[in-house]
Image (cartoon, rainbow, N blue to C red):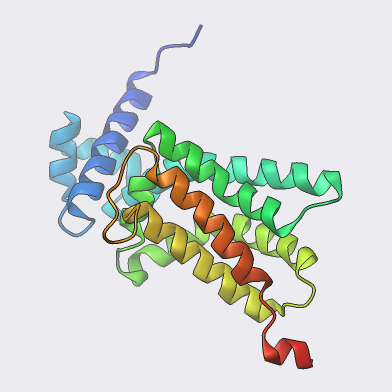
Length: 209
């Protein structure tokens, strides 16, 4: 049986829930700590007590959703490595599958899609903190399946793949195609195909090296 949340933990979760909702709806700049406290039904001092600042609250809001996704990613990657036969496609699936699963629960993707549209000066330090380990681990694994791709090219290609994923989180279908409940899953399948082809492409420069 799950233990009931302490008053402090319950207050913290209420603030995070309210912040997530308002950050997604309004963006960081247009969301005030006072509005978050009001929506959470707590006093303003509680937001400062638990998170220190609005930047700290944004970082905590992102961490709450991203940490489980990255934990699952790294578990799937470790399982692949232990088989001794990872492929580019299986590594990409391990990276993207946890996002698909999170989307099915309604937790995380909307926030991730929103925060990537915030100013780089605000969001980059948080993104590096949250995604740095996972990104490096996956790029290292991909380097083993893509011996003909330089480290610099792999970094760029991985960067573009992540950008495509974020775009899909914001816009689930191409222009002219209506969204439906399965659009995101279908889009992620297409993204794996697209990313696999892009990562494995050998350029003329590489072929001549």
